[in-house]
Length: 258
Image (cartoon, rainbow, N blue to C red; front, side):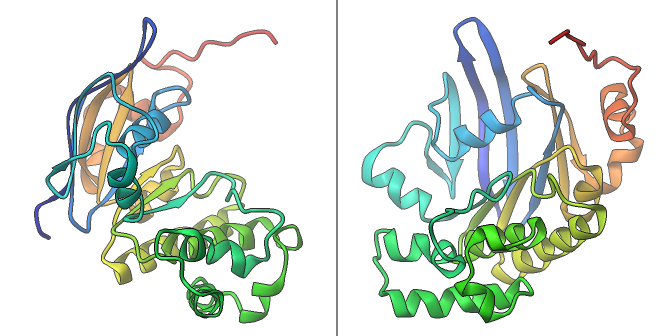
């Protein structure tokens, strides 16, 4: 492995008086797979949005390939986005576009404006790489099962040959077997691309399958980070409670009447 692909120092994101991220330091090495874990509302999605430039940090530094990216705008941000692949929670496919058009969307509509026939060829190749036949390319997303939609979303995420791929709860809504299929594909395709990956998830089966390194967010801070092999002997009561899914422990779940 080479040096750091992503370096974060002193990252803070406040919404009014609410401190969602309160001094995050984090490194992700080239080709490494980082999983960020934590309960709902712990700031995982806000962290991703700050790294990708969808949000401007309140304070702190974010470097990608050694270059400061926090708060960049315009053409520089567009160029940065072309290095990223995204697998969104729920897939987030465009309902009105055929499967192949979904996969090829960034190729056709990005700055390079690839010709449709060339983009379709790449899209069908990516479909094959996620275990789906070329005939699926002419279907609409509504005609696909949840597992197939997730695989199409994964094909879209890798279509532009990204340097960094962000996975947002990649196994949400899937049964355990299909979840394992998706996890295996994530590992396989990320290695083939040589991509650095950042996954936010609460699914510990996913974490154990895809992560080299784990960081846990709680109270706006990273309270533990280490290799996946170290997580079961972290000695951290917050981590212990989370990975074993225990109701009792230092993490307090507020139950509210709705």
